[in-house]
Length: 106
Image 1 (spheres, rainbow, N blue to C red):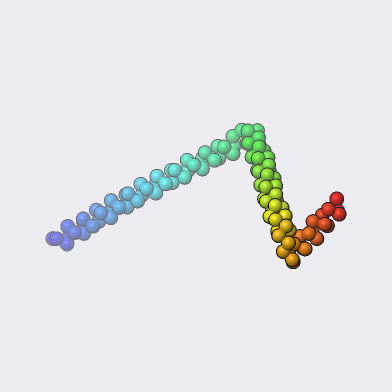
Image 2: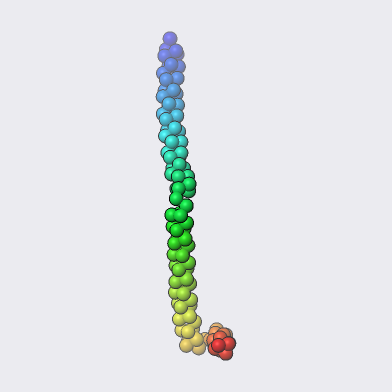
């Protein structure tokens, strides 16, 4: 008698857990479908607007990369000049040779 009640209680708990899990999976599925739908609507939307947005994004990235490389190069040149002024025998001669080669090629 007590065994049947325990089995029914365990089955009821399992059923409740399965229902909760099922609802969670359905909610997750719904959320993912809505997100994907928005992306598809964007891609299938106004082609001219998408082209302009991507074009401007590409120009912005290009300008950003150019500015970043310029700043890093300037910092490296400053560091190399400081190394030359320290007159470290091997490194200083090597860098001064590079500077001479660059000046001659102008």
